[in-house]
Amino acid sequence: MKVLKIILSSLLILVILVLAAAYFFVRSLFQEPSALEVTSLNEALHSKRILGVFAHPDDEQLVNSVFVRAKKSDPNSFTSLVTATKGEAGHQVPVVARQKDLGIIRKAEALKNGYAMKIDEQEVWDYPDGGVPEVPISELKEKVRSAMEVYHPEILLTFWPESGATGHKDHRRMGLVASEVAKEYRSKPKGNYPGPRYIAYVITPRDAFRTLGGENGKFVAENQPTPTHSLGSETASKLKGWEIHASQGDYVREAYGIPARVLYMIWDKEYYYVVDLEKK
Image 1 (tube, rainbow, N blue to C red):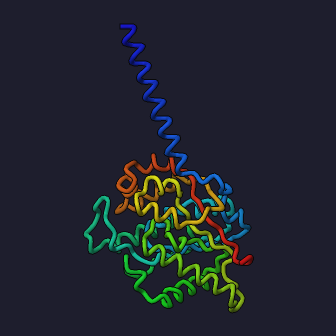
Image 2 (image 1 turned 90 degrees about the vertical axis):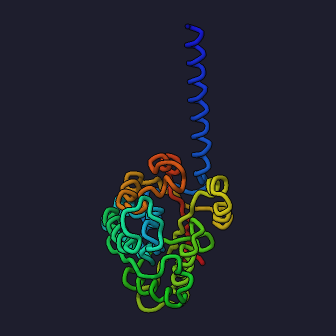
Image 3 (image 1 turned 90 degrees about the horizontal axis):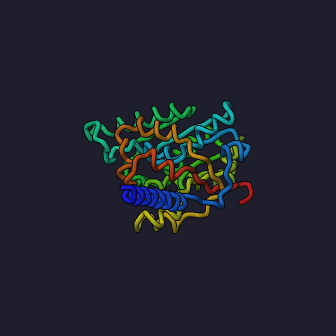
């Protein structure tokens, strides 16, 4: 009996060691060690006004920590967010409404999550989910330009145009549109607002996507720059966000095969490639 106990204890220790090694290996894939870790992006860039330009309800979950930490570091900072579509073509996980009503539901979820993140001003537009690249780029640029005129961001937060963080074509188009508008402001100033000084592109962990993400993950990893900044994840806010986005509440489990709480133990930072437009 004593020998059996020793064998079982040894096996248990071995299993624990294997699981620990697997955890730390997978976690290492989600790290970008060259990125400068900062407490908040607006504080690091000495900026008070942020505008996020994204494609779908729940895209803001990728940049949740920027918005939450902006208010934590400076309650007087101003944050704003525009979302180009209502996400009406999305896949419900779980199903919470008639599919024909999904756009209404997801718009409400986006607005509610923005409120929970203390975003000051928020808009959800009505461009077709999955069809953003078919909208004339001049129309999209004018819409983004109008938002910048209203919110006067110093930091523009958006997708890297070549990867869109996940490869989604709507993401890539909105990142391109927002980038071009910001750069046009700097090259051709109009009025008293010179445009954003910084563009902060959200970057997904390249080694993780390259190793675990299949062909699409490889595409994303190979078409992203090395991030310059990182923020610790606001896990509680992100988990709350998935509760609010009820129609997408199981998205993380379906996409990554693990619960959101476990994913954020591994993917515990947000990464950004920051471009200073005054130095361009």
